[in-house]
Length: 216
Image (cartoon, rainbow, N blue to C red; front, side, top):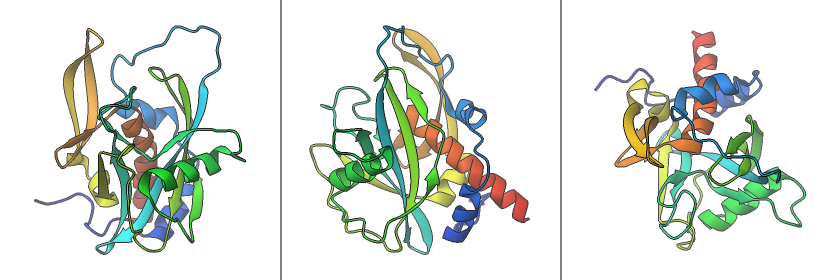
């Protein structure tokens, strides 16, 4: 199969440069958002703040991203592919620290020499009433993953070049909440990465793709 993106994918220096560019925000989000996107009636309560980590590391000669499959007992988004992260807690100095703490707990990693490359556009998640703040980070070597089985059913190590390959993006019609919905997703092995995770990844991929086009 011929891939539009070389299997090497972007280097970490190219990712750093891309993260210094203006964020595309909703223009990228809508490309992977279900149509129509579910809404949540406002009850006046502020959304819960959360932080997630796009953790990049070198593996098999290319940058990889760690994703998790949520166990079936975890309520909202059970069984879905997600980014490591969770809700802000008392004692967290910032949402960046929330994302790092949660990633450490879920993935069972020390995250020594972690470098935060920047943040992406916050995203509101109607089903869980969360306002998610994504952070992009890099470590110079592949971690020794020991996922917490209470929070992680499966660890997915995904090369960036695969997510950037246009053939990875698919779309299907599903029934969600009794409605017929067009759902874009990234095909990663046997898994379908959709919903909030796909929407967040769409902005990151848009930044990388724009940077790659500018260097040609």
